[in-house]
Amino acid sequence: MSLLVSLYAAILFFVLVPGILLTVPRKGGKYVVAAVHALAFGIIYYFTNKILNSTIEGNCTVKGKSCRASSYCCNHNCKDGHCV
Image (cartoon, rainbow, N blue to C red; front, top):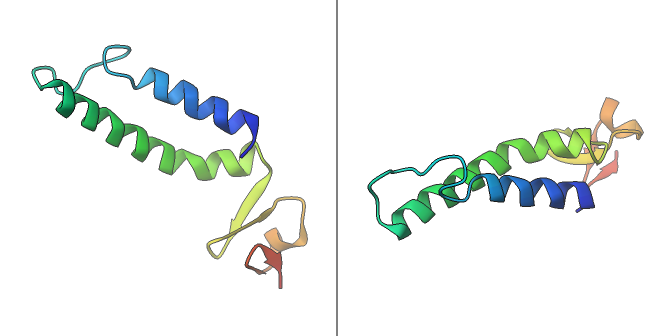
């Protein structure tokens, strides 16, 4: 994992800490609020991680496998991270 991806995860975590941007649910106990924010972090990170890999690290996904964007794989097939 690159430094930029780690920095992104840290910033996303900070922004989603209860009380920074919002607190959901407003009248929930501290564990419920923490669980909701943890779930929000996980969902947002899961869906933005693929975008980060392709943008920041230069990776692309071909048929569910991650390959370097500069490689031949992005235009063809890759298997276990290698061109086929």
